[in-house]
Length: 432
Image (tube, rainbow, N blue to C red; front, side, top):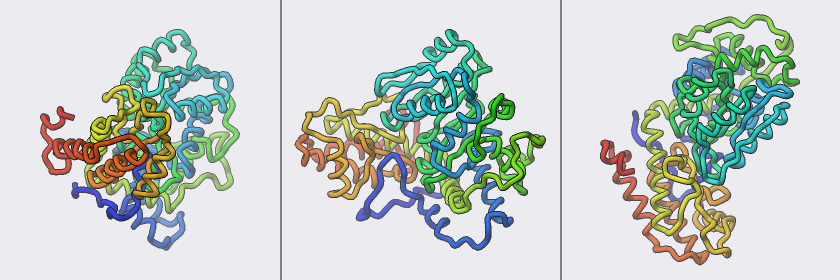
């Protein structure tokens, strides 16, 4: 562990949104280097291999991740297209915009979808999913979002995964970890996650443009034995597995912890003789540097920083007479907080708040009054500056706030946590 991450100078604009997040300083330095060789020279495969191995360590999985150029939706679509066929029963959970996206992607792949609808700010209960599966035993795939950033709410992916693993082992379990990975510890294998999709632009503080997908052997059995393969090359996960296995230096897609390839791929009708998919040199180099920074700081400390920063935001909002959309503290996301707006006077406008914060104070937050505490931005300097600006902006808009109350409440959380002073005992943790 090498200490706290580098903070952005106070006079600069700061991005406290829920993504695209700022690039970590180490990532900026890495992608600023001139490319001295093409992607097929020996150096790049080693960088990609190291990147995949670091991802595997953070994901707690023996299965290798695929680095697919494109936004996170590319990865989600590839996962759906590669496992869902016409008429397959798919169960999705509607927690917000991204829950609805999973439903849309499943339908696009030909799935016959059933959607569990939830009130805004609530998370799904495992028993609700169990009831749906008992009533529909032919269900092939269950998909849900870990962190729904539009509401700042977490779904219990561990509890759902363990339930599926024990009671419905035939069901493929797909989880959108786009906003959570790097901010919340995820144990892909132990929790029975068959398809995990994430991206670089959220808690990893790396460049936008890479979707990251990891698939279990159960998922691969489905992918390799579809009745009708997807009409795609670059959104077919089979193509990416072939790329990883045949990549000269074994790029890590199927690597065991010892670094060997567990099994060779046999010739397959979906193998393409022409040039197939390929990762992005610059984006992978940037991701490699960002992951290295996380490993150097220590993943546990990284997760703890983001948790404490979010709780500081919650305390500040409470001191300002505001609330959060998430139903309770246990299901509130540690990387994204949405301010509860419904109790405020009608003349207060969320878009106006966003504009004032950016134009008057140089602070960017997300639409729907959402504050991100993602990655290296989750430090007191940035959170306290954001809360101070929020106090001033709310007063300007007509919501009377005792300026300084929110900052004091947030500072107390930071000081009591011990994360930023090097003291972390059980009493301090329990107080949060």
